[in-house]
Image 1 (cartoon, helix red, strand yellow):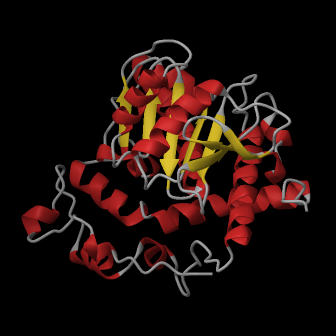
Image 2: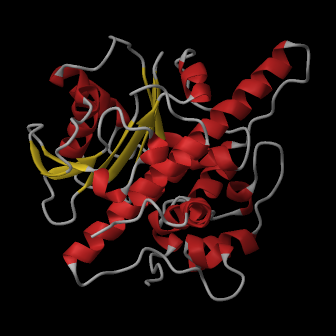
Image 3: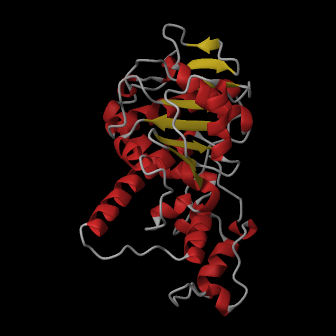
Length: 311
């Protein structure tokens, strides 16, 4: 297992003076906080002791592929347990580690809670099935969305999209999530975007390209108006964790907005510099991979590993 070595000192947030370290309500971040940012990676900062291991390394491409597909299947199991299913809607895609212009996706019409690693379908960028499970088709709308994202952004290895309830509800506002709590700061700045149009089920290549363009090169969350959520990441674990976080963030924001409208106190947003600092401290790919492991490990325990690769 590897440990992350990327230093947060390379990130853009710096505080050169006391004035720079003050927030809009007069709360100072403090030099101790600043030094933590400069000296430690996200995993090192959150680990009191030996840091958590990050994404494992492989010297065998087949073993790596099977491990990736197992984590992809685990993500579907997590999504099923959390109630993200809606008929045949929803898909996860995962770039193949060897053939970079191909990606794996789930079979159409198979419940998320039944998906196994061996069930995945391998598509090329024309949409042709080139490997994996051939007993079921892939989702045509899913191909248009995910295919465009993988083609436009080589650094995006995985993407998740479902018709989850709170994501659908929040998408009706065609608004970004506000920085109303620490967790929401994962979606600070260019990390999130809104696709402001809805043209029905995505069956055209042009619509897929527009969605991909809206995500942006730094995007991790795309809120699709009147549709739902889409997340992207370096690993399927990262994309899946960010999806669960975005869905919960939509739920929390809807609760806050409802309370405010019913005469509750006005919501207070996190100050800009603090939100950016929090994002800097938490958004690394290795840390986001680790954020998903508790849910993955729970699925292994609850299912006895029934979704793992079978020879």
